Amino acid sequence: MKSMDEPERTVKAHARRLAGVAEELGERGVDVEAVLREIQTFEVQIPSWGVGVGGTRFGRYPQPGMPNDLDDKLDDIAVLDKLCGRAASAVSLHIPWDEPREPKALVEGLRARGLRIGSVNSNTFQDQPGQELSYRFGSLAHVDRAVRDRAVEHNRHVIEVGRTLGAKSLTVWVADGSNYPGQIHSRRAFERYVESCRRIHEVLPDDWTMALEHKPFEPATHHSVNMDWGTSHLAATRVGERCRCLVDFGHHPTLYPIDVIVAMLVADGRLAGFHFNDRRWADDDCTAGSVAPYQLFLVFCELTMAARDPTVKGFAPEHMIDQSEAIKDPLEALLQTVDALQLACAQSLLVDYAALFEAQERNDVMQAERALQAAFRTDARPLVAEARRRRGGAIDPVEAFRKSGYRAAVAKVRPAQAGEAGTI
Ligand code: PSV
Ligand code: MN
Image (cartoon, rainbow, N blue to C red):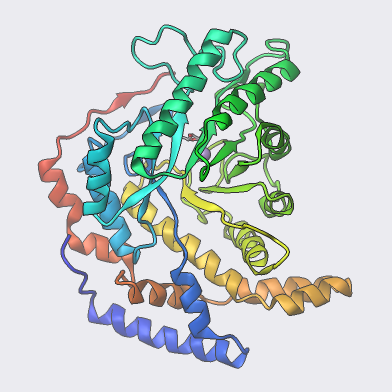
């Protein structure tokens, strides 16, 4: 992709808006330079599966220029990373979806593009071609020891691949659960799940962590074996010291306050990190911050509070995006997502926490809420754009991406993908 010479009008408007917000924040006693520095440290991992077009069970509409292999995906992520000012340099892989043929060559491929590996994700929620022991009735929690062994073995294999790539964490999500009441013995299934996870934890390299991801349902329609943060926490504490809980924004009952889940996991040192998206139904369907930006902001407030609290030890959550775009250009959606995350991060840095805590102590509900809303309702977009610009990124990444003509250029060389029929 060519260098970013953004339109004069974008550059001028940015300078004007930045000066305006800097003046307002200066009057409120905010150290704007310190905020800009902190925004610049924000990083989020990009999933290898996130740069392709997604779909639903009704079908999938291919778009021109979609990536066809891991190299294409890395090319796309490198473009994204550059536009975002290097906030998205780590790539998270699902194995076997993006199993590298030559892990060592992948290390080189990442390095050549200024990227690096993030977490590695195991996939035991699908049978692979020719797989004899099926996951139809579960994987790590299956009643049959042989199936569990296979699923444990797969996770150990993912750790091995991740080691060669330089990864430091394994993410485990299983589809295990039930479609009908009575189908499985819930408690025993949970115990089998924990036992299998323990066998994975046993071989975890010393400097690695392992993340369990919960989800209430789907594809299991009655319940998932790891169905909520409480179950996930119980499992993690039983599995081992380096096992934590991952919070995917889509995986909660409607209106559940995700910020409070985060607070609880921080309280016990078990927050692994996030899969960012926004929730409309059961899973990773929407661009982060597109539906409930206040919820996203509240989560970032919890993170900022934890990071500044000396009593919270070893706080280092991993941020990752996990969303699926059926309609938008997936790269544009990811640009929008990184921007939304940086914005929520910036807003959380603008909260007057001293005033917030003081209002809480006085049971002054109004002033406590006003402390949050004053930050949320500040237009922090120029701060995010400036932080990005200082790291070589674009003031307006989506505009710069469109202007670059990248998608049209790759569409000429990437074979078109076939549409897929729905399965209903
Ligand atoms: C499951 O719905 C999930 O959120 C898990 O993170 C999977 O690994 C990912 O989506 C991709 O299907
Ligand atoms: Mn997820």
